[in-house]
Image (cartoon, rainbow, N blue to C red; front, side, top):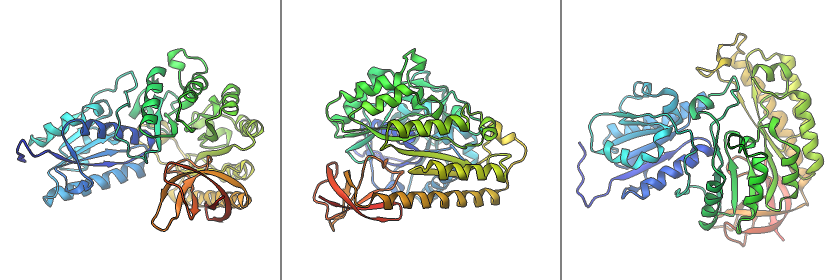
Length: 448
């Protein structure tokens, strides 16, 4: 059993994996750890206790998490680490089976025990036996205030809901995160104000389905009304909307964005596919006609809108003709940003039991073809921006004076960036620039 004198704090290394929702959970756990007389170290694989907050949404994320866990266990075997704790989504998916997948784990912590992490660390450090802390999540959304931010100080994620009721046939989120729950409006606004006091001027609004905000609270047009309240908070410069469910983007929401002085003209709306049969098999309420109409409506009412989407290739039964239809749609829609991934038959989802599973090689070929198609669109759009003026939020500046920042159409961590030559302002400040060139997906800009 590890020994520590009362004067020696337990050192904690923290590995944060996964999506922005997971990042918020990691930041909340770090806040709890920092408040509990535990010492967070910058060298996680030489700490007394390593905590790995995992993602388990699709197979590659689970593989990444297991790789990080096994590396930590190797460090434990070598005597560099004393205890290994695994938390987050993968724990909800595998539960106690995780002990067998990676022998040597000292504790498994589910989402429902997130806020108890500090006490669990202390118990685990002083105990020889492994333990699982798995508890059904509350029907309320956890309070995300008092986080220790791991994003740059000038931007942060603002989670407004948890879980999902959509039940898409390919998705594991409802099984992991539970039913949809909106965070009470007062708590959202209090958290936003706290983040602004901490220095954030850009808030990226997230949830598994942000367009559904307020419906469970009988709050009609909830997201539109929430945006109006957020806009009143002094200090916020940019409000960015992520994960908008296409079928729920209303004329009222579009009008709210158009009239807002702080909500940037950027919409992230995962559509997954365009073929009507595939959409039906995915259990999506969208149709090709409605999606095309939505794209046209957004561009008509928000001429400078930047659109991002996510697509799945190789869904069960996807034919060559259906994939070609998707390619033609992408060429027509000309999304500014597009992410795509191969379909993975996740255990427990209806799609995993469907017939006509597409061979992996075909999936990979289609993914490459789709992304090459989008690459041409993105590069052309970048070249069309040469000579235009952009206001950029600076994220970092290196020793050579090269800044890295973003204009309103670039979300942090997932989109391209603006490379600012001879940057004279500090991170967290805005700078007026002119686009002088394009470098692949990124823009080269200079101050004006």
